[in-house]
Image (cartoon, rainbow, N blue to C red; front, top):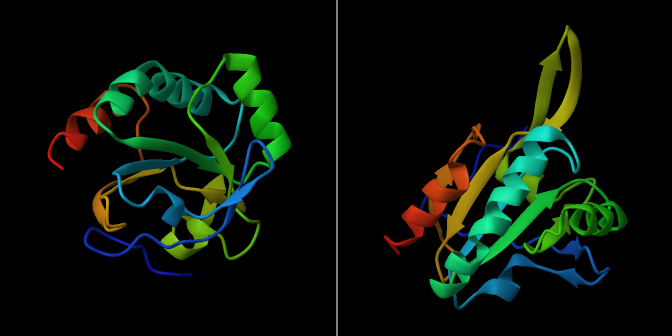
Length: 157
């Protein structure tokens, strides 16, 4: 298990497949602040709410010059379907199955539910500065009010 990447460290630059099928690393966002929110699975209640909340606030993030990116292990075709179903405007990326950003960040980890162990994404959000350095981390995110809290934190950059 990898250790968790923290504030002050450079955000790992792992190539991810975008919902449109293109491939892009997080370094493509350098030059402006970036909010990267990792969530477990498309089209589940908490993940849908989180994506809708960030979509609702996207114009304010845009006005502040902050890019947004939602990331899960779901394939890009599923992201495209999810985005279309809910009219999501935040770009979504598919983290590689192995050795992806979530692995490098230490947030793809063993979980347990009803006594069953499995690998899963820990809902985590990163605020990354224009130079690619992690400015703030929210771990084990509770969805309600989270997007607004992140928007407020971007003002400190």
